[in-house]
Length: 420
Image (cartoon, rainbow, N blue to C red; front, side, top):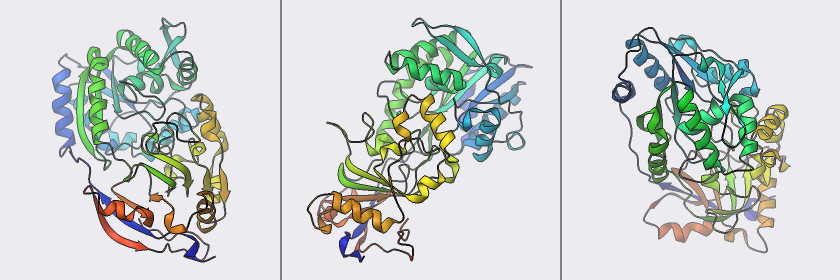
């Protein structure tokens, strides 16, 4: 099969806002000093650490540890990642190690446990869970990145309050809260649980991490515990203003080199690919509107967790071979999002998959196929686009064409030769 059945692709470069924190330790020290004034001598401070691929995470965590040590406190790290890491204490330690967060590098203990306490009954009638290790500390620093959620839209999405809900709720909390969200709105449940946790669980403060479109630390903001709920919406709005996006808001096909939990909770960020309200197809108002998504691989850091693969209609066979079925199943059930684990049609190589994708686009010539090709949903500064977009790209002052249309190249196995 020759390349005459496939469109040519050209490359564009996009520019997004790029604020950057140049001195992370100094910024964290200044921010935490502005909200932590009490004497902490001899007190234990539990610092939450999640499982996402946060830029500069080891530096950020170590800087928090050093701040509390300088105040005479005894910091310790608590994995706060719901059911991730296979829902085991050892698995969550392994996730932190893979992110560069170890006792030796951080200079403090990491206490990983899946045990929880029941804090109280929420007003809606369900138990509020809290990590047992964190509950035994004198103070808790809630550390997390602020970003849009992949399934829920509102003033509060993924951030400090969600960390108190899902992260510190561990497996039991994550299971209960995701079920309850089927009966109430996410906004109501996240506020209900977070308010209870702040009031009853010795939350000292929050430290919000904001990233720019280039996966860089754009801002670090410390927030007093009783102000987290009022401040977080403005931080989310700021992140949304910096967010990357695809260069075009529609396409017959999106090719994704890699997906994984280190990239997004759904493997591919639905704020980038759409499908936030319907896994299998765009709905009215969805941007972008993508007809088919083809995934080429799982990231190594996802450890076989393919939650979110159900958003794709097609994938390379190596994706299926790399899936850890038990881990993926556990994550999808805990999140009450079983369709996220549905396995799409798999193909032995890229050439065959792309030929089928072209055929499914209708009775059109390859040159008419609208398609984009990205490394992953975090890497959008450069995007490969099919030649059908060429004139539109030339007319768009926000796009720089950096490589003209050229045929796709394949190796001996029929797989794409990397352009990224």
